[in-house]
Image (tube, rainbow, N blue to C red):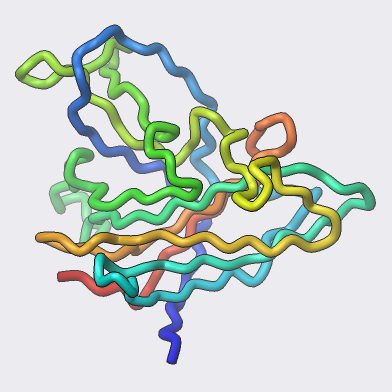
Length: 214
C-alpha cells in the first residue's frame, strides 16, 4: 500500500545555499537573477501536485516520487523546461530573535535535483566583496542554489528536448535520499518551470510532511 505524504505550500521562501570544497582554480563570475518569491504564470497552471515515498528496491535509500500536471491556458502549444529539487533543510525551531540562527553551511543536508546534474546548481561562494571565498587550504568554496545555471537543461527525459505543452502535460520525477550516517529524508520540494527562452516562468516551494529521519 502506498504511503502518501501531506504537502503544505510555502508562499514565500528564498533559495537555500550550502558550502562545500572544490578543487583550486580560477574564479568563475556567475551572475543570476534568482527569484526569491513564489512566481506564477498566466500562460499555464501547475495542478494536482502529488508526493509518494517508497523504499528503493535495491535497499540504497528512500525515494520521493513527484507527480503533477501542467495545464496550458493559451491556444497555442508552448515549449517549457522543468526542474524539481528535493532537499532536507535544517531550520530554526522557533521564530524567536533570541534563537541562534542555523549557520548556512549547516542548513542544507540533502540536495537532489531532477534532471540530475548537481553542477548545474553549483555556484562560487562569494563574500561581500564579490570575491570567491576559500577554505584554510586555499580551495575555493562553492554553494548549492535552487536555480539552474543552464535552464534549458530541464528537458523531457523521453525526447532529450524541451517539454511540449499542448493541452495538459503529465510530469513525473524521482529523487533518492541515500541511506547513510545521520540520514535525512526530504522535507522540501521546489518546482521550477522556464519558458522556451530559458526565462523563469514558475517557481513554487512545497513543505513535505511525513518525513522520517534517523
